[in-house]
Length: 147
Image (tube, helix red, strand yellow):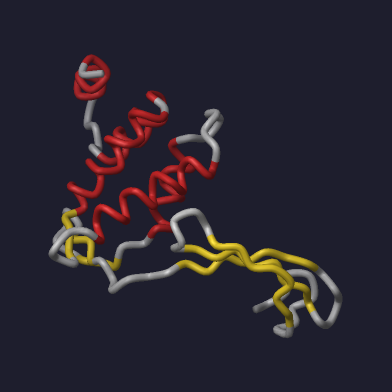
């Protein structure tokens, strides 16, 4: 693991802790070269889920990309990172339960929006405005009235 302090690749694990769902392990590490301590996270990955996008392209499901979108939607909102990670874990668990290893991006967006709406209304509207690609104020007002 690369030390962010000195760039050395030699480190040792000091402590390991599994997450509640058992799909992640947090490891505390110490750089052998400079003594810097840092945390890494290992994530269990099933077979790749494939997301089919609106433009007919496909890409592997990327939980980091989804987290970036959620972080953007929750800027200056009181939503803890752990809540967003739990949301992503919940969505990912539902996707892994599907018989197919493929999903349309529209369905993925709906799964995320359902959960985000229960967490924070403003973040939901922010996420929906990007996801649904509102073209004018009327579409946006219609979505607000639907809440």
